[in-house]
Image 1 (cartoon, helix red, strand yellow):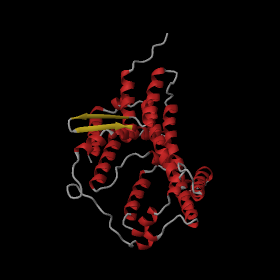
Image 2: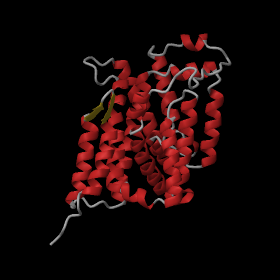
Image 3: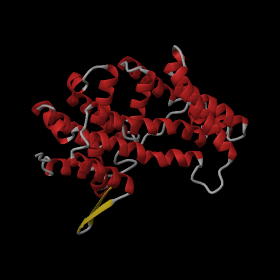
Image 4: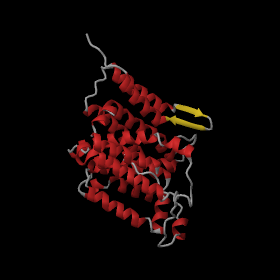
Length: 323
C-alpha cells in the first residue's frame, strides 16, 4: 500500500515539474540493463518449474514443457488471424492436455470446488497490521518497478508507434499504477505493476487496445468468483507454466536489449560500459547491502541494488573526454 502511495506522490511531482528529470535519472543505459536484469532474474523460476535444475528430470516434465513452448512459438510465428493473437493461451491449453494425458494434473480440487465462490479478502487492521521494518525493506523496490514502468512504456511506445511517456503522460501511467497497487494491496492482493511479461504479450500479439485490456480485467474479476475455473487454473502443472515462461522471461530480457539498440547506446563509451556492466553483475549476482541502525535494519538486494547503483553511477561518473 505504501509503495502505491510512493507511486502516486512521484506522479504528482512529475505532473508539476514535467517528466524531463525522470529521463535524466533513468536514461536508456540504466533502463535497458534494469529490464534485462528483471528478465534474467526470473529465468531460474522457469527452469525450476520445468525441473531442469533437478539431478533426475522427469521425462514427463520435459515433454509437457516442450509442447507448451513449441506450440506457443509456432503459433506466434506462423499463426494467422485470431490464432496469432492468442499464442500463449493455445500453448497453455496444449500443454495442459498433454500433462493431463500423462497423469500430471490433479483434478480433485476442481471436482470439490463450488460453482460460485467469493474470494477471501484481507483488510488492514483486521487481517494484518503495519510492519515498519517490512516497509523499509519493500519501499526501495518501488525504484525498481518504476524503472521497469518507464522501460516497458518506452518499449510499448515503439510497438504501437506512439510516445506513451508524453501521451497519456508518465504522470498518468504512474498514477494508475500506484492506485492499482494501493487498492489491490488494501484487499490483500498482489502488487500491480507493468509486468514485462505483458509487454512481451503485446509485442507478440500486436494487440495494445486499452479497451481489450479493460475487458480482460472485467473478465478476470468475473472468473475470480468461479470456484471451478479458479481450481482449474490452479491445477495447471508447473512444467506447462515453465515452458511458457521460457518465452515470456526471455522476451523481457530482449525488451531491455531493444531499448539499448533503439536508443543507439554507445558502448564504445566507457561510462556506459561501466554503468551497464555493474548493474548486470549486481542484479544477477545476488548482491545484498544490509544496513542497520539500532533496532531498525534494511537490506537492499538484487534488482533494487542494481537500480540504485545504476542511477548513482550514471549521475556521478563524468562523461568520457575524447582527444
